[in-house]
Length: 127
Image (tube, rainbow, N blue to C red; front, side, top):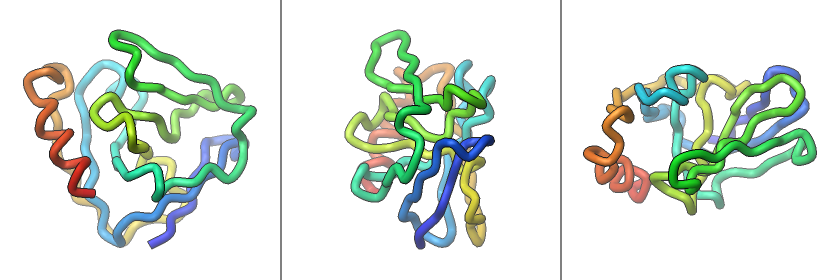
């Protein structure tokens, strides 16, 4: 299914191909819990930025592998390049304008990322 998504002010728009019933991860790490991010990791080939590349800014921390992208206008993080799958794209399900038929949410202990990284890496390779 083709989903349309955007940031709050609609300056950044994207589309992503994913199943009708989404499998998303809810992470308890500090950046995800503070930003309300609900993870849908897809191969980069399933993601396309439609508008707003010039409205994006990037934040990195820790290892610098994850590239957290935010809209410079409204501050929303609609997607980013995840540490667990730097060749993929992690889309915030909360930023999808096209609503999925259903969402199956799995809890992920990102506060202890190093101990659980293999779970996310394995899952992202299945997508």
